[in-house]
Image 1 (cartoon, helix red, strand yellow):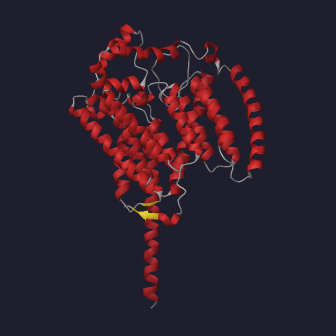
Image 2: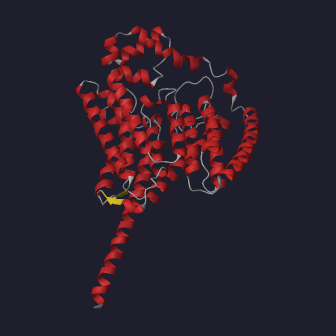
Image 3: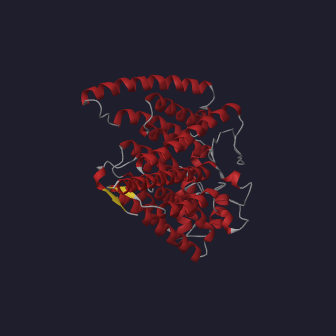
Length: 424
């Protein structure tokens, strides 16, 4: 009698330990895979393989972190049952569709002789979907742990960027010629550093950290955006902080007390912000504002759209040789490269397919944001506003995956736990 009673208990305990060990393993593998993709910039990859050059084998055109994430995803999805609840089921299925459509797009590009262009869609977008699916393979608490690690990475990147701006010494290699020194932190470009600092502010507000830790982290990210020299990102970061104070609800207070508290916090934020701006000006972090926002760089992002004047309707509808388009941009517009995602995608895919791809990207982000806190929507809006101001979304970049992972980690559904279902 005692044996039969004890046996199941022992078996259950061993099963629970195995599941806990497997969950811990998945967490560690996710952290390693994500940080490998997120923290190793292209210049560092080029030291060991022909990652961004026109030479080299085709397998060298994908980031090492991309391989890790793509290999990890099926392991995470099939090594044990996956338990989702409520709207998480729809989000999981949406990510599967997103990845499936991207695979079809890659096959289309290869089949039409544009295999070289497929690397961007794998390295930037397919791994974002695969990372999201992997994150759904663990429970909500572990997703938040992964999100905390990614936020810590963004904060560390901001701190490194501030240090680089102060010392004029970069931690990671960077070969682009700059008129003035701008830090990169753990990113591939100063604009990317500013964009991710601005985007990270709202996600820090969603973290379940002590108020002092969140406030200090937001301050670090704001200073990091200033140090990056990314003026548009800094302005959006300032507007973002004000939006968080004004528009994000404070459910723990009554409406009247919330209004009073917000008024006090808003006044304090403005006072501290004014003092901080003065310090940043004195430290030289805001020197790029001396040329105003509408300098040569800003003009180039408008001038690039004149390239449509030099091509016909066939190139617009069906795409064109990008080398030819770059030549037109160089000779007719006097610009070094195509610094515009809409222009790049139009000539790479053709206008109809480019519009369909853009709709797919916005759809998956909208689907992941469904029933998420208002703060997550603010963070995503900041991300797209900054990313669409340059060519970020048409290059090999981890930022799409970073934002999608943070949305899933901190934008948890509010559906009751009893709606949980096994989909694995």
